[in-house]
Image 1 (cartoon, rainbow, N blue to C red):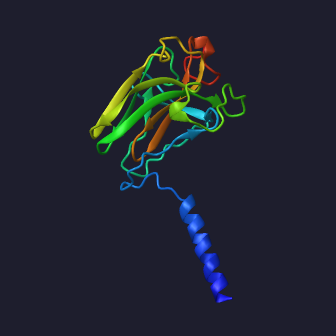
Image 2 (image 1 turned 180 degrees about the vertical axis):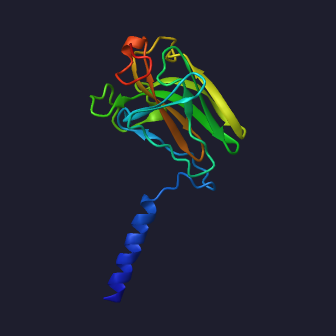
Image 3 (image 1 turned 45 degrees about the vertical axis):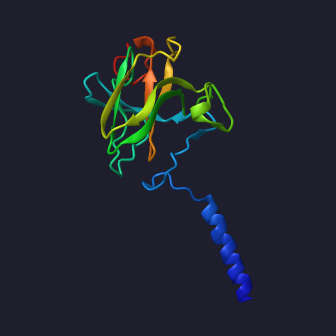
Length: 191
């Protein structure tokens, strides 16, 4: 009976070790894998004006994880009418990918669905990419003009900015509109 218990314990531990993965382990040599089976769901946005003053929350936005030395991705203004600047902080040198994907509001129909696709390879969801590469420790900013990688103006809707490093996946949800009339009720500037 004891042999049976030991074998069962060994099998359980073996299965558990195969299913565990450390995305934030600083000693890990693997970059985090970001897999998306459909567009991300947005539950709200953190609103700000063009100089970064907080205008509160619209809906129930995701609360950023600030439990370690990585700062969250932050963009101004949000909602976006013409262009926005988004920033993030790297505490140490890291290979970094930055891109924007289509998203949808919780409770609405998904626009695009890519079953089991690795996001970094999914051209149906990624709308804008920024130059990848190894960046030193420090703060970085990018400007997004509402255009896709082919220079076309994107439709009004929700989008998510991703910053993927060797240690962390960070994101920031935004609402982009082509006119103030397309702002949703409760958003500043809605006529």
